[in-house]
Amino acid sequence: MSKLAYCNEGCNNQFYLEQFKSEQLPGNIEKVFFNCPHCDHEYICYYTDLETRKLQEQMQKLHKRFANPNENENKNKLIKQEAKLKKKIKAGMDKTKKRVEG
Image (cartoon, rainbow, N blue to C red):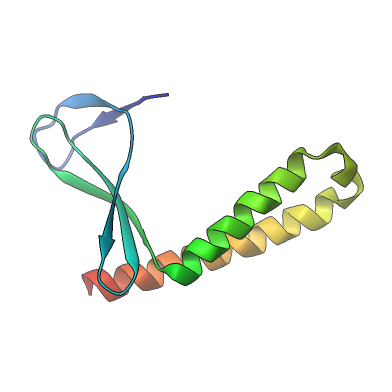
């Protein structure tokens, strides 16, 4: 599913964002980004390190538990776990961005 995007830091054209790209950087860091198809301006979405990617895997497993009808009695517990994981993932991404971009 594509999303409409606007190149507000480059050519000011609209385009449909079809997919994100990723690039491996030194130190086992992954950069996730997309480029404007008109002017090739790069928009960085986020950076992850190995620890953050492990947290993202935990989040995926947690989301599968949300879909499981047998987990209905644990929904509040799962929601709290999700909130904690979101904070940890954001903190990890922020830390990695600061390390990469300074």
